[in-house]
Length: 151
Image (cartoon, rainbow, N blue to C red; front, side, top):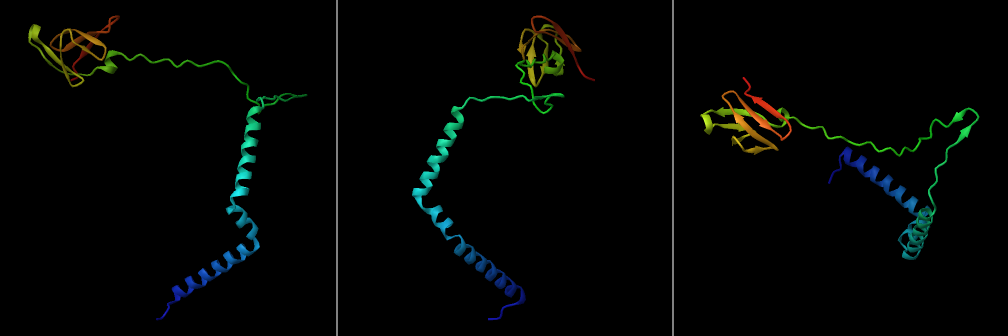
């Protein structure tokens, strides 16, 4: 069986990596063995848990350093103001899309947001008040809005 040039290079590289691993293991045997022993592992976990509990039992304090030239520019002031997010009220033109009208006097229907609606129906919180040949009047109880057909 003949080994080509690239296989020889890989074999040499593998040998170097193996030699390094053996050298590292010999120099750090105590570290590797202590890692796998469970008694030391439990002691380390207990010590870490105790340190965490101590750090949480202390009250948090915030320090501001003032020197002769004034306040520390890197210290952030704590603000207690809460910004209220206001909901933007959407108008009927933004919520409702008039697609088509089938006008037949009192039996007229309109296609709004892919729904067939007649006078008196409620869609997206708006009541349909009147359907004419080119527009539909809707009301949210406070304000009436006219939706017109797009041309």
